[in-house]
Image 1 (tube, rainbow, N blue to C red):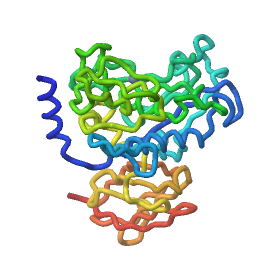
Image 2 (cartoon, rainbow, N blue to C red):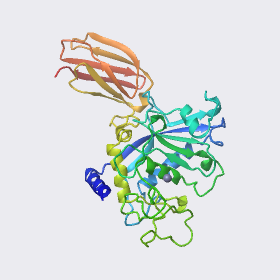
Image 3 (spheres, rainbow, N blue to C red):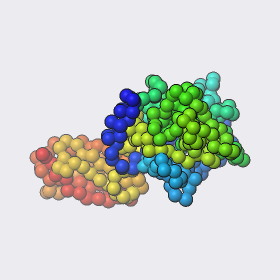
Image 4 (tube, protein in one colour):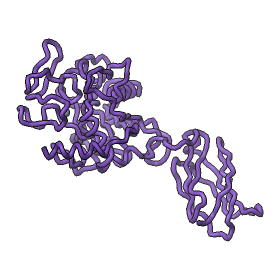
Length: 368
Ligand SMILES: [Zn+2]
């Protein structure tokens, strides 16, 4: 009952229906194969998997993620490969790591491999590692820090905060029951605070704290044959992403599950910061433009550069109204930068920023 109240309290807090966009970095840990071969999954494979995840989370019509179930919802949560690296430079959001070259020669595969393969700041990026695991292991997720009921103690190792996926199910020629990538959808559900539909233990006494997923005594596997029954005698929701059913029959997140995930994205450390991360271009600046703020400025000026000019050398020239140069230097453009302004008596300065694909002149007001 306490748990129910808590969820209702959060439900009121999640009244906004904005779309959350989460930047993803994928770390592919491979065995030295050429790109697209073996464990070294191709960019296309990764992009297809991310697209499928979005079809599922957005319940997109015309895709496998669509459903017409009365409890089924569009969670309004999306995942996008990062556009900007931690260094502020353009990125594909996909890293490739040959585990033969990792310094640590022991336990390079599986979870041990992740520690040496590295991660991006989990405050700003959702880390997904792909590596070889033994068959039968599909994936693993770290839970968020949250006071939502039922969540196990999350990891204290922030370098493992993310999800781990067994690459072998996505290699060329692989056509098993998990090839559609619903393992990602399921593990992301955990990452955002969802439990399995049967709760923590396999009996009818545990709950997943979502009233609209019928309580079941344990996981379901194959989805052929007659629909199994839930603890209360109604049909079980084997289509729920938080069951263990085959990929082909999964297509439901419910409203209560959506509320839990959005609650985590609005309150939990290393989750809520993802929704405003600089890993995705969020401002309205064009690819070849620049945005400066605040105006008026005091001692510093924030400058955001569009995608096409990142990594390029630029010249910064600051003039006073008499046309005298009072500050001049060159720099390499990164997505978000902060520049110190010189101490001057002028209330108005003219800023020129020039580069190979950018030439802008702006009036900068100084003062309160
Ligand atoms: Zn699970």
